[in-house]
Length: 77
Image 1 (cartoon, rainbow, N blue to C red):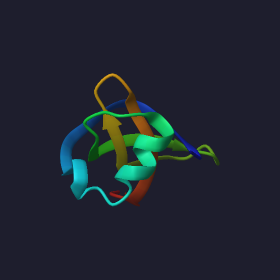
Image 2: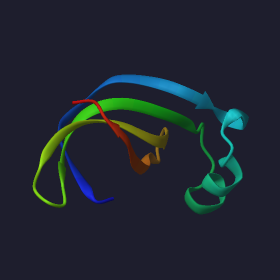
Image 3: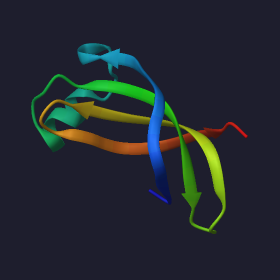
Image 4: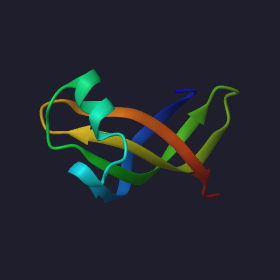
C-alpha cells in the first residue's frame, strides 16, 4: 500500500460476497474462513509523494478478520 488513509472511508458499497469473489480460495487460504466481501468506498488519501487526493478504494473484508488488501482504483478529484 503506497498511500495512507486520512479520515473515514465513506460511500461504502459491497461489490461481491462469497463465491462471487474470484479470489475467494486464496483469501481463505491466506487469512482464514469467514464471510468474505469485496467492498468499495471513497476516502482522502496521502500519497507517497506527500500529495492528498480523493480516491476510490477497493478491499476485501470478513467479520472477525478485518479489512485486507486495500487498493487505490482511481482518483475522483
